[in-house]
Length: 468
Image (cartoon, rainbow, N blue to C red; front, side):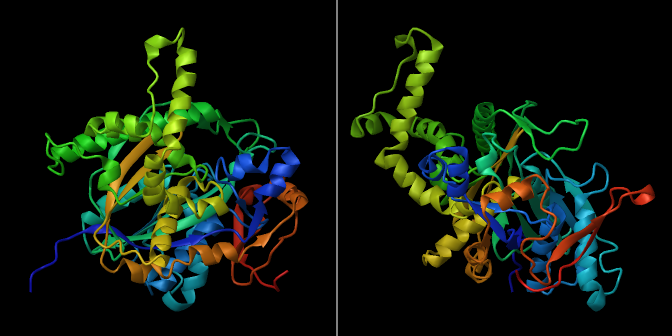
């Protein structure tokens, strides 16, 4: 029997989303914002909201537990659990340790109180790209010994100041990924394009008091996203040529190479708005753009025809908007991007988990529509403010459907409870003292130490009681 070639990648995935949500229409009315601006302009429909007892650790634990239970994993066989987050609960102790403490509570009866004793646990932070960094690191780790099994989890609470321009993009959730050799879901090539520059588009500086909300510049952050994306795509192409994936003389549009494109989504429609200019550049490089212009009656603005840079940039923005409304670009969006944004419309931004929720959304949507993705390539564009982008690709494995059918992303989103604005504001300002929705068996924050050597220490337990 011929030995199978070793491949490394994602074997299974699980998502946890808080049980509470706020309808964006409710927020739009309170903020006097036209609902259509948020729903049709940004793709924001619902916002996932953490309950009183939930945080990045509880959500991570829920997602990891689903992976362990579904795959009947012995915790003693898990060599590492790496958490990507920018919602850390401590400036020294990894948030992942709190998650593993909860997991130990659940699995110790079956596997012993030391079942996670030899599991390496670490947080990785680089804004929204931290979990992608953790995934790349864990892929390398598994490649060093194919017997290794690791779990990467992304868990975050995207929280902004009330009345801020980021408020309506808020969200929360966690995605866990089982990483090992001969994966059943996605094989990931060890080929990552990267681009990094230290900027202050979005950051959480030290302040006199602990603050969960960031300092950010939305327009600047969009520009940084676009610049790092373009640079990382170029770096991926150069590395691919060096590795023999592409021929040096061959131009291959990445948006055509990839059957689906999976982006970090600060809001659902972000990818289709960010990729327009890159789409045009790909068409130019292919030599089809002049024909496109004639076909769709588009006229490219010439910089020397405008009195100043501001006038030119305004005209350019108008031109790109026309491109986005063309049948050519709409077809690209429908085929490559739209399925990935469906879940995001109902959760908001999940920071590090956003790109992986987009992946699950795309895969599950294709499965429901009867599309066979086996052997197809997926392209990933990850971004983290501060700022860094990474581009990589994965190949869907033959047994993908058997894995994806158990995701239940959209069933989980349907099973949530809507809250009113007053409850949302109390939760946001920490004025809500009692849990809004008790789901027996879920983990929750029980208490926080208030004095001595336990000051600030967090203690968790399994929730009990009736649904309310």
